[in-house]
Amino acid sequence: MTSNDWYFGIDAGATKTRLYARSRIGNAVLELLGGAANALRQGVVQTASVLSSLINDALDELPRGTLRAVHAGIAGASAPSVQKELVHRIRLLVNSESPLNLTISHDGVIALEGAFAGQSGLLFIAGTGSGVMARTGADISDFDHVGGWGHIIGDEGSGYAIGKRALAAVGHAFDGGPETRLTHLAKRHMNIYDRHSLLNTIGQSDWKFQNMAPLALNAAEDGDDVAASVVQKEIKLLARQAELMLRKYPDLDPRYTIIGGLSNNKYYVNRLCAATENIWPIAKFVAPQATPAEGAVQIAMRQSIDSDVVR
Image (tube, rainbow, N blue to C red; front, side):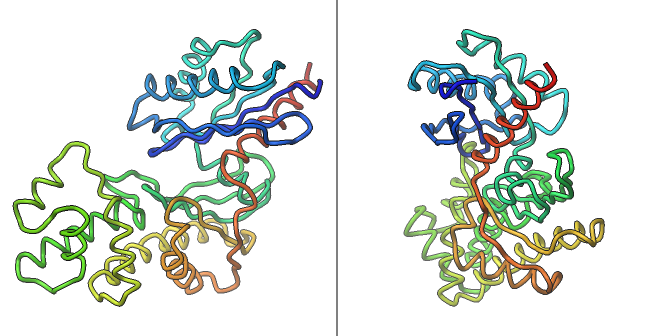
């Protein structure tokens, strides 16, 4: 191996895809952003297109060298058959001078790797979607997942779920239910001012309920009872998933962290920490040690070394 050996880590999700490149000596040299790439929502073909385009762009921008390994954590790609098809399609689309050493996992695996540097712990995923994952051992395969069933039947505590429940509260207010500042915020920021505008808005095929979540969190923090109830109900449902995880792994290292877009909202984090303390009082909240994309790079580097040893 030389200093011109490169390793790519990719974090592909429902909102965006991030590629993180690192040289052999450990320096981060490049970060690129691409579009959404959820294998279930966007499909395998579109997901492969997004990832291969990012890889090709990175190869074009980096100094000449050898791409040693790529690891991608992809939302909706937990099934081995999906991972196998993605590997096949991406390899066909990447302009690499040598065979592409590519491995794929569920995006939660790289999130755990980055958050706890390969150690044990519990991870709340709180973004557009949600779920709870736990690293139960030293190997990347030593993990379990609770929740994460998608926006149709799950994703409790997510931006989507909070936004949907908040808009329902707006509709109830139009019907004569409890008054809430959410109606003012929906009118100001989304041009929703009556029954017809609400129905027209949520009826759009590309409408994103998660857009309402920041407004609900702001209203809750400002003391709006309806908004606070919306947020608290969803957070309790997400904390319940952690409780189910702990029933399976009562000896899990007592630490947890939160990643995803909602982890940047102090009000949300404080409420989720309070709910977690009620079910796991000995646990400590810690900041993630690294991003999921950085976790993917760590896996790529480790698997490349392992493959060299085998050869």
